[in-house]
Image (cartoon, rainbow, N blue to C red; front, side):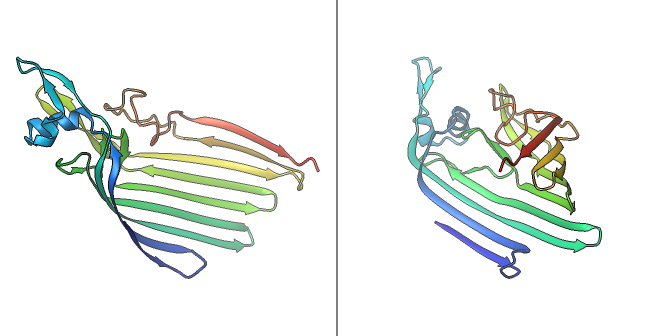
Length: 237
């Protein structure tokens, strides 16, 4: 079930404010080993303990974390968008922005589990980051054949639970902001030349303990540092 409320400024779409609430049941999910252990040991949830098989001496033989279609999830949030354009004697200026706030992402990865509150955390089950805040913004100036653009991407801070011998440590992952710039020149209608730099400040992706593949969340953060590029296109007809 999904419900949303939009508040905008007419069909031009110059500004918009949307509230979102989404519920899903029966999605396929496999709980992470740490989630099953935590809910069995700390919460004494029988449904979690049933996934853990032990030897005769009480040591763990294996953890059964197969995928099942018993998952439940509730997502609530809001987003804001603004797009403005103005033509002046100095050229055409365009400004745009989109900000999203994830208020809640509560899930039950298996039948009878304690709800897991993912908003503002790194989810060990899905290996994904769910910061409260994300934002994109851009400014573009164009005059004649010239165009200059600046873009910003913001990913809010979050925490992840790191399993230690003495319990769980809450590791804070700082917010990240990326800056990109581009300059393009139209070749009299026969082509286009574009030069640019992405990740201008050479920001490294933050360390994420739960993701052993790249020590970060490659789906959320950029793996490459400062990158220069050139793009040349010609029309042959």
